[in-house]
Length: 94
Image (cartoon, rainbow, N blue to C red; front, side, top):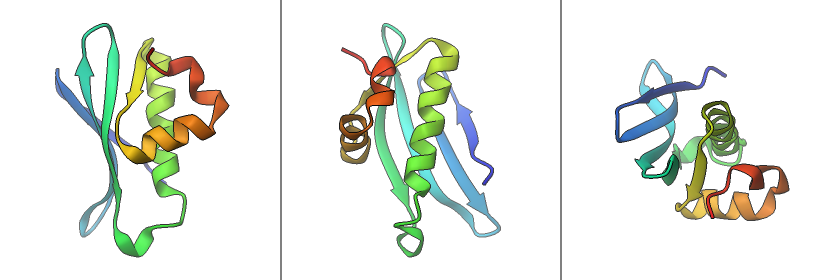
């Protein structure tokens, strides 16, 4: 699974695509104080339940660690996963 990443100065996304286009994405906004606000996570309906969103979130967390950033998990999926996953707490914004 080749998770791709693209970003501008204010927004970014981790995503998966195939010949038909993007089929899963996690988007974020850069905020002040080195905070990424995850605002949307979506996987095509026919692929739900396969752990794809979790892999995108894990990659976002790895990216935050690599870049010395914190994450504000605003989207409901990310918020729940941050509550469930103790290992993500080191990158959670206060």
